[in-house]
Structure formats: C-alpha cells, structure tokens
Length: 200
Image (tube, rainbow, N blue to C red; front, side):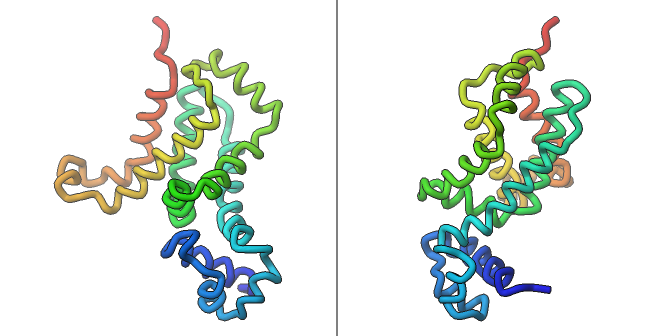
C-alpha cells in the first residue's frame, strides 16, 4: 500500500529528473504528490534531505549487491562480475543516476552525495585489504581508488544513457543487438583497461 511518504518520494524523483535539483520546488513536489507543502516537512528536514531519500536507497542497494557477489574465479572474472552488476543497477535506476551525474556537474553538493555514500560504505579494514591486495590480483596501481570507482560508474552511466538515443549515423556501425550485449562489452572493455597485462 502506497504511503504519503512514498507519494512524496515518487513525485520528488519525477520532478528532480525533469527539472533538476534546483528547478524542482517543494511546492511543485507537494502538488504532484497531492499533499500540502508542509506535509513534506513532516517526513523530510529540507529539500536536500528529500533528495537524499530518493537517491540513497539506490546507492546503498548497488553497493550491497556488489558486495554480495561471489568472490571466486580469476581477477578478471571477479572484475567482470562487478562491472556487469553495476551496469544492471544503472539500467534499473537510470532516473536516479541521471540526476546524480547531470546535476553533479553543476552542484558540488550533489556530486558529494555520491562520493560520501561510497566512501561511507567502505570500512577501514576493506580499504586496507583493497590496497594490500590490488597489486597481488593484477590491478593496475591507481592513487585514487574512490575516483576510479566513481569514474567507472560515470562511464558506464554515459554508455547506458546514450544507447537508446544513439544517432542513426553511428548506430549503423553497430550490430543490431549491440545494446542488449552492452553488459558484456562494457565488462570486457573495463577489465582490459583496469587489469594489468598478464605476465608471460
């Protein structure tokens, strides 16, 4: 059963997607949710809190799904598995990722939401284990693991976003089922880019 809070979140996500973070007003969100504007503040401290409530669950679910993946196989197999899962999450939650990446360019406070969520999800033990094992499993050394993680997500988002709107002149270069195979192609591309070359 849909609650008042659910209706507010649904309206907020729709309007954030359509008008951007700054352009979506709480008055318009309230109108679309069929509630009084004051009702929003019974559930959320301010517009930023409402925005966080729209995007946080998606980020947390993405991180949870990636951490639940099996940790077996070669470094390449593990990396491909994580990237394919990230592609699936982005496909399933494109409106939220559209807001984070398109608005984040203009509003650092929005970009910071993504960075803070990812950073908060990594415990000091996990960070130390990652840094200590990266070279051993064949990862190219990178001084900013967080930047690499967010950069990978942004690159995948751009590919998934542009896919359905590919200009016909470029689409003619591609196989008809290219978008359906994008998960595997992206995983291969980034595995080749991130993993160090195998030693003879």
